[in-house]
Amino acid sequence: MRIERCRRARARRWFARYVDDDSSTRISVFDFQGELVATAIGTVELGVPNVLYPKGRTVRLANVITLPWHRGQGYATALVRDVIAWVMDADRVDLSATSEGQRIYEQLGFSFISAPRMKLVLENSSRKRTSTTGLVELMVGRRPG
Image (tube, rainbow, N blue to C red; front, side, top):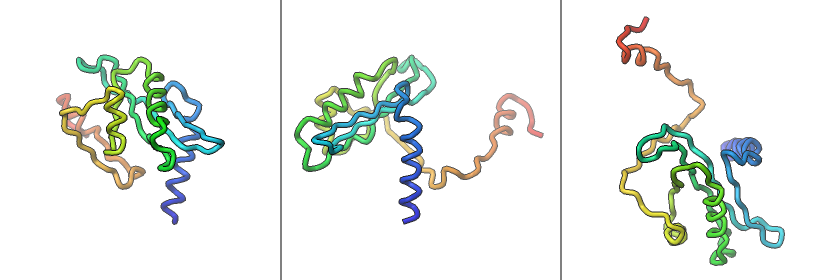
């Protein structure tokens, strides 16, 4: 129960911070007769510009959710289109598709990429980070200390 309360508190803080920030977040929702029935969220991720992605900006599409009894009405498609229309000055839109959503994304032009994806889940993201100062100094030819 405590973990659930902490998760909800973090989510509330996140939404409070980003709900009105149109420059980095797009929160699209579909309301049916006063009930929130579908969502899609786009967030801007900044990276280093490179040859493939000269702007260094990616939009991460997440939380594309439609309540089961409202599926098949086109809500998710409309919300994903809204996020894509919001995307300005970005190189691409990334997402992790479920098998249920794959058809929608393919119809909107998304395709699978061949690059292998990896991730590291940090179990305690608030833990104290190790300093990398020594490593940086070694890389430029100086000894730490």
